[in-house]
Amino acid sequence: CKAVNCTQNYFWEWIPTKELFPDCADGQSFSQCNDNPLYPVDFWLYDHRTTLNFTSNSFKDAFPDKAVLKSQYAYWPIGGGIISYRHAAEILSIVAPRLAAAERIHPATSCTRANVSSV
Image (tube, one colour):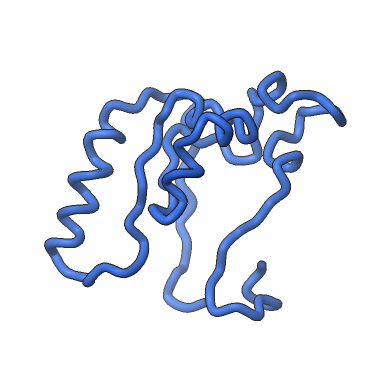
């Protein structure tokens, strides 16, 4: 939901898979038209609470993003932990080696500066 009309206390984006793979014709398998995804991601961070779903073969079948198919992802321990330097170090120890081993899939893009001082 968008911040202006979200009734929950969190902000997650939900997009139909068809919109994530805009080059796909109706009824076409997403794995056949995944060259130009909405988000050209080389590495995914996924919510650790979805590990069993995200890492399953059925997820790769339903969401054949090239980074997912190459297992270029790591879980992000989003909640329930104490915010501390140890927790930050744990996150880096999980993500850094996997990110370092990832290969570029999509052309590089420029960064966009974002103002995140308020929501």
